[in-house]
Length: 418
View (cartoon, rainbow, N blue to C red):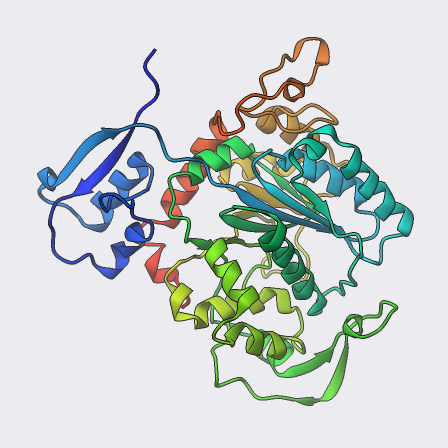
């Protein structure tokens, strides 16, 4: 049988590409300025965005092999009592070519952190590929405080230093869970520009101006050896004029170039904004958003989505609903690759494992790299093949639908940093 082929699209000389289409040129091929996006998605977007009248201007040719799958770098964080759920989320997300940092904050007991450390150390797969790291010296992470941002920056720095080559950084909590396999996600994202940053954001901060931007909070987790809640000082401050505030979801999928930027901060903007957000309530819902939308280099790389299914009240309260079996169909229909918030041992997690991930209890989610048998309850990933092989399933189609929607002319440029 002939190897699988995919198509590339060459644009013959055309007028200058309009702004709403320029995202397609973010990652051209080094050889001949060919757009690196899955052909089915690209054709659809070209026809929508350019409203091409003469389709003879588009010429197709076959290309082999298909684009290599990206590598993802995950942070999975938890607090007291989250150890077991963090393990489960890690196993559901595992792929040999990805990188992982896990962290239980200092509110968790020493026994719980030691148990997680032993779990990571004793997993044969993790030891073989060396791609799971635990932050052993746990950080204080104060709810709604800047220490949550500091913990994310800590993990990102570790992944930049020790994680080798990877393309996107994904921050999750132990209360998150995947709705698609890693093969589904890696396959779909193989055809996307690696510069894109998936971050839910808006400059319409509304009530947050009076409740978060103007009040000044202090997070004792920055300077105390024992955890304490944030507290407010009597003074208030005016809205910043040196940069524009943005807010959004705390859950993101960020490109490596942007992670490099906010860690190194070569123009100093990330550091200035970080110092401002040190006194901002719920800073994880604003810091990265404000940095990316005030950095001209990255503004046009934003995709306004956190890639999550989250069930909120209307209007939203402080916390989302805990998801149950009643939410399963809505989760699937959302086409999102991740969902939150789940309680530990919630029955819907078993349904996700069996129906969406094909994952057995205590095992990693199988992928194209697993060449063993499932007979008699065996682990198919006990025998390892080529880790670059991905075998997408129905989840890839769902993610493709979501990406096509997010990158459409109605939703991509018009929703960037507005």
